Length: 369
View 1 (cartoon, rainbow, N blue to C red):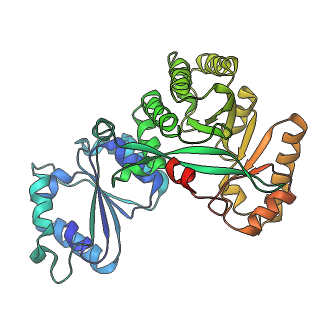
View 2 (view 1 turned 90 degrees about the vertical axis):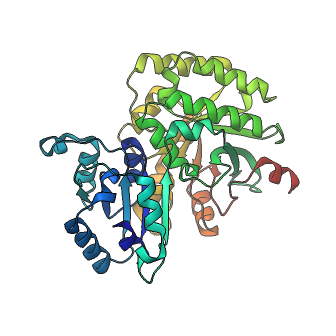
View 3 (view 1 turned 180 degrees about the vertical axis):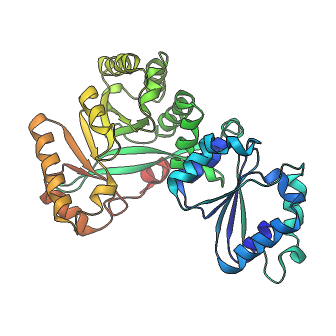
């Protein structure tokens, strides 16, 4: 069935579990979701005819298939978290195939044979592995993107550590990785792994540069997290004074008391705090009020419209002015052109980050440059 779609240039992504499918839906666009891959091998003539119709009329479909989707009764489908997500997005079709046993491995092998795809070869079948399996492989690494001064010689003042995978994997996409981790309540686990790797791999970088380390707010409700971070900073040859803990919001904070205690502990140790993606997310302003950050990063989703939208420019100018009055540094994200750089400088933003100013690269390449 999937071969009929993929043979026309479509892309098929197979998720091993429901949380992985939810993470994919939040990061990428799919036209069709197949909710039970295990039943695909024994799909009847009606199933096959339907997918042939889809492939014929909608070339280039993006298909997401879930391997271990719960076998729900028809009456239970509306209460499924995955199906609710599909209803929210509104542009996906859900097909719960018959609950008959089938072997995914055998089906995929048969799907890849030339005769099953007719005259056109299958373009792409991609697997999203389970998060536990990915973490056990120990393939996470960090790249470092420069943050530069906008008013002046545009010198680099800091680098942000960004999680990547050393080998080809869907989970090398940090947005997908952290969304998947959030859905499984792996906040502290993934953040401990990423911060340790970021600090270890940053050892070649000069101590003259500050280092921004991404942390999800819920990780700070783990009473051991701040001590772990402090130990990783010392092991990496740095001090909290030149580390900026960048709060990257994935989910709302459930335990405000524990979160506040974590923020207090970080500040007592000498860490500075930044709030990422300011201007998007319902709880973003509330997070700023609770944290009293040293640095505010203005969302790139807002900054990218500054050149074409007067209201956006007015908003950024107001944010920059407010922060300057309060002694808070501002960072504009998604600086992609020289025009973006000039506009943000005119609006009073202190620092900039984006591909025009420097792409994320391993620390060794920065030292060699």
